[in-house]
Length: 473
Image (cartoon, rainbow, N blue to C red):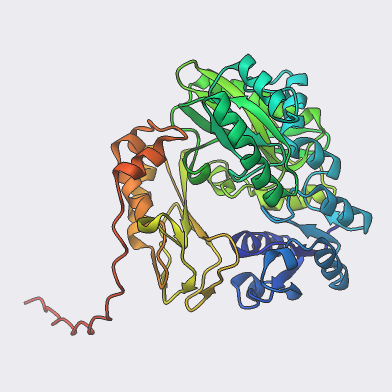
């Protein structure tokens, strides 16, 4: 069907991203807004806005009946969920389709199968894709977990079956720790996802986090190469690159082929990401999970391939077949994305909402800033602290790092502390520049490199007097 009007069931920078892609396709947009978001940039850019409830997400952006009813009342024929919130909620996807609207993403049954991390492991094994040694599906109770841990060996990672974003994860090094941490992980998973189910995996201490972007139309799947997301804090990504910094060519080929094979095995539709751990020491790659949605870090893939992933999602959801053959997709140069969050790195990354008093966006060739900010915008305290994503591209990784350093120097976000100083320090670090990092590297680095508090705002400088014009003799 031809999509004519999209309901944007999200907020922040991803909502802006969806609206811009839709406008380029000649599609009207209706932006969902909570009581706290009526003045956000996405609301200004959309063709119409639809109030969906109070500020707290549980009563607005996570309120499935309210979101669906708003889409229907606005005359929309499709819903784009973005990332987070309801993007991987099987029930919401089914509600949208049952109401006769298009869900811009995978089919509900695909979200259910791949969104349950334990079930996804089983599907991967059936497709011949290697997984981290662990439990066969969910573990029911402490005794079952003990048996699995003894079989695969300590340390083990306790993970939420319905998880994502680093929640519901613990590492146990002994049986006593396993017994103590399982209830904690289950309670956190229940609170975050409404599902306290857990599974176990072998813990790989020095793993790289590498993921593969795929696109499918339900019949055919292609990959758009890989990204590396090894710089993480508390299992939350802070810096992403494409391609991976130090991945051997044969491993890259194996990784991308396995991603296509696994996505094709479930008839995947839309944009999705398959996540892997790469063990530098053993040169082994293990599938860990699939994200059945657009990712925060998708711009680095767009920068190296020139393919608009959000636009492709909309076209596929509207019934168009995949326009790309694998041989058409080329990766050129290197791209880096850093997340600019309203957090104070000098105070344990404490979230810091407030009003943006000054905003200067960097520019120039190969620089992109995906953001929800405008000068004077009041950042609300109710949601994720992500303000924007600074993305750079250049011919080589070394040149991209230089461009990132320059762009960070131009970026000014005043009124709230941000994570920009952290990224400037990382861009200058020898280990980061060498690509010698893993998923636990950043936390150790932060312990050894405490960041100074942000400088207080400086008063405006007096105007510079006009210079004397020099005349040639």
